[in-house]
Length: 179
Image (tube, rainbow, N blue to C red; front, side, top):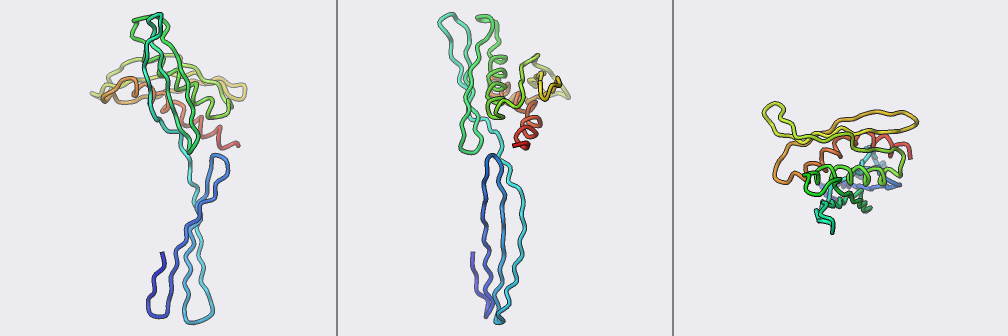
């Protein structure tokens, strides 16, 4: 944007520098007046690319098991993973959705940590229905468990994906920061 007020011209320029999974935004304001002096101010702030849920697709295998394919995006990168329920008709497509999400997260983090679903449950907390997940994570020779949840809205499969993402967000951020 450039505007002209009397003899003063103000120009705002925004430039985004991208490297890998992280970007920096440089905003520069220049004020040109009647004197040859130019006042330049700059501020930088990191722009974090976030791992985002795109979609989950539920299909049934020939053996009657549920297969869930989860698609996550990170900027222009696309990560897909699939998982199947353990037993046909046991109502575990939610677990398959959460496990597929964890596999996609692991791939997006360039396998800097390993994660697996320890448990998934429907819970009622503070009067809200939630899907809660407990995730086992192995990173740098250490094992930790993290918890994630998502309030149930319309689609429970999507909610299971979001609960798994909620559980792994911090670990993903730390793993990608190391790059």
